[in-house]
Image 1 (tube, rainbow, N blue to C red):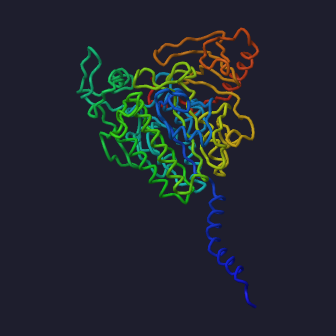
Image 2 (image 1 turned 30 degrees about the vertical axis):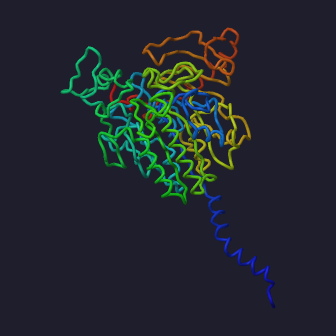
Image 3 (image 1 turned 120 degrees about the horizontal axis):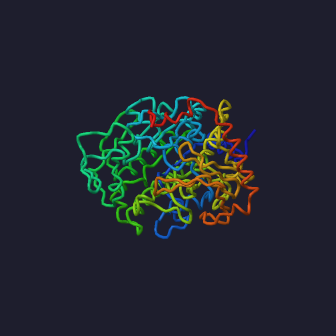
Length: 498
């Protein structure tokens, strides 16, 4: 029997296309790639899409236009170590041990780190077959002192970056504090001494010198450079992240890209230096924006855009104490180190072409801890049931199928609960400032209605006694659930009692 020519053509086309269809079907059936991009000390008001008048962020603006921008997205702490621990574990720092009233962040001589019994996103996803990488700043334990604190002991296959903040290795060449000689013959032996000798004035300067700093750069367990060339650090981070994506394009993969920028001291590469009308801080944010653009373009070129969930945020608000070397919280009050809105409400942008409606703006309450509770279900991994997980699944917000599952947020500063948000209302039990060490208790608490007053200017407590009563009940229930245990010891942060 003679087969009609059009049938022959159809059979040939089916033969040629079927491998592509099966590959596409396999890709859609597999769990998505997941990328979390974390800026360091980037303020709520620092992006073009959030209204900054002089910082240009075309790539992040495009990311928001192609995805979803959150207006009420929070870091889980007001400084970096506890914030990063909360993001990776989905748990408040008071639960995972990364909190300390006095120091609050790990220093290079801190012996402690993220407890071994904590489960990170990377550890959870590895069990599902994910390739995992951490690129950038770690700051969850100095693995130079204790190898058990290395990212590769917390679920990451690959690591490239700095063990801690880029300002924590000042050299004897750094300008000393005014009226004080720098003792180059004696290194600080305690964290208190290190804090007292910290060169804050030099960190603020916009005329940085490379020889003032000696940050170590690692690839896996190998120190490959010290001092690190900080001017080209964002570019090198980006190259390593792109290499990881290309090596694992058949997926699935998880990339935790924790930028050093725009933490002080500020350095920008030659390509971006003097490019921003905002000055050096704008240059650094512009290079960070470029990096995000490189990542998203690589996903598009590799055909991975529709199979990759990307989220961009910051670890806390802007470091106002560094003056012109710091960013802006926009209309929000205060910045890094405080539990006012400017210290913990941060940029949040979700991107997933084909899954997230382009140009959407979400006003639901959400937090970095929610990324843990979102990533695991997306990957088909069960949420651990042997511990309290404080994160909430964001998919109802991302897919616009329902309201936020988060109704409350607890604002901690170290081990101290300072404020609580319930819906639109926020009660302050203790207030503190990024620019001073003091704190002020409030009895009765201050109360602000954030949808009416995001700048927290007008106390409405006398008009909403019922709200304060409801929040007090939430606080009592929350505290009752904080059972003592080794992972909650504040000493785990510093490795010594203050």
